[in-house]
Amino acid sequence: MPTEPLFQPVASETRPTRTLNLTFNGQPLTVPAGISVAAALLMSGVNRFRATPVSEAPRAPYCMMGVCFECLVDIDGVPNCQSCLIEVAEGMQVRSQEGARDLVYQPANVQTLEVQP
Amino acid sequence: MNLSTTAVNAEVIVIGGGLVGTAVAYGLARSGARTVVLDQGDDAFRASRGNFGLVWVQGKGYNLPDYARWTRSSAQRWSTLRDNLLQDSGVDVQLKQPGGFHMCFSDEELLERQQRLQVLQDVVGDYPFEMLDAAELRARLPLIGKAVVGASYTPQDGHVNPLKLLRALHGSAQAHGARFQGGVQVERIEGHAGDFRVSAGQQQFCAPRIVLAAGLGNPGLARQVGLHAPVAPNRGQVLVSERVQPFLDYPTINVRQTDEGTVQLGDSMEEVGFDDSTSREVLSAIAQRGVATFPLLRDVRLVRAWGALRVMSPDGFPIYQQSLTHPGAFVITCHSGVTLAAAHALRIAPWIMGAAQPDELAVFNGERFLTDKVLAHAH
Image (cartoon, rainbow over all chains, first blue to last red; front, side, top):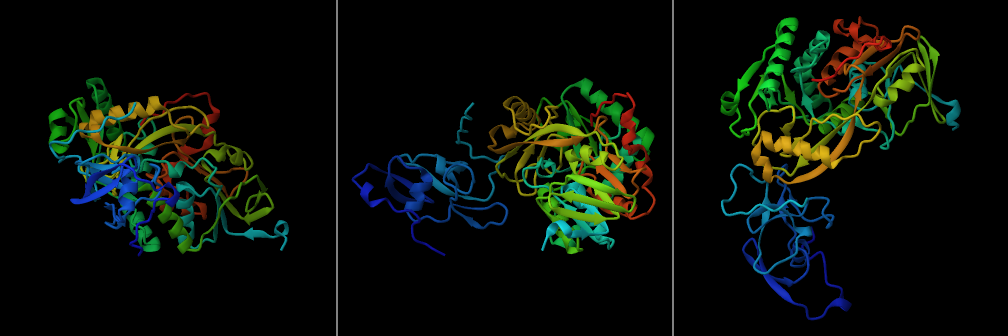
């Protein structure tokens, strides 16, 4: 199994960019601002984003455009977030999504996301 | 090889590779009949890829008791079908029959529900059901919403994973020797009793028996062998959620949790012709009813929505008939391909091969639609 980062910045595009800090499963990561959480994790070498609820097999992003739901992670306590559709933010706490979300017992301090009309 | 001169020969040709055709083909193949299944391409209206997955008895057959009996006979045989499919295909279709709930949101609805089930019990006999008020319902389903004033419950109901069912039926039928031909658009059926020839482009298929299980394609095919099958599309829309931890142990008419954790919401009915798209109004109503039923669904994320077309006859009941003018030609069509899969696999196949027609089926001939009667098809 490949363990190298799946994505590399295009050399001609590499220039000093603003970075920010987030954590993945408690580990601090410094990543470019303005990219998706999925891209940030992939370029940091993360290749296991979640375990499937069905088989517990490891999963990583597949489509990177919001369709396949393989890139689910927990972001700041909100489970099952599509990391390919969410931009990184300073201080973000990202955790791998371990199995299915629990609707009955939810963390107390989590705000639910607004659904777009 | 010149295909136009080479016909495929079989004992039975089944036109339609959805849940209905494949269940019948499975039964035929298990009994040893050389069976060929002709299936359209993925541009067809695939009702069997879009359904909800209920094995549902309660309320069905209100004004046609033989439909209630036929439905029950299938539900009672479903565990046998499940076992057979697991053995033949290795696929566990995740049948669960813990009984099911039909939620009511007003006292009038609850009363109407009770009357409907009482009539069925009076006519059918062994037809257990319970009416539950809000408190009794909450004792069984603690997560139920305040808007639900009560529910009917019958121990006969259940559900399966319908996609696994389709795969299991295909695999099992093939394990018993049935041949599937995909991408076949049947154009013509010619011949007479005991000698039918089916043409699709350059391909030809010959058999003494032919089963029309082509869903919405049946009206045009039936006409060619002296049968009347005036089915029309009835659209249902379905929402499916992210996978969540199990919270609902029972199927209900409009909300169920699948074996793999997703929540399905549905139970819409629309007559919009051959249009299987979704609409925001209907999806919104489905979502609101789902949240009213189980308020914790307010926070669940929806990941897919789709529309699919039920195969609906004018009175909502199936059509099962052997042609009088072309004996050996049968039409099998219904909108409950999941619920009735066990009856189709275990009871229809012997009839196709010459055994007596199952008792319940005499009323399901297509000629009943040649009268002017107008019937409703609620369940």
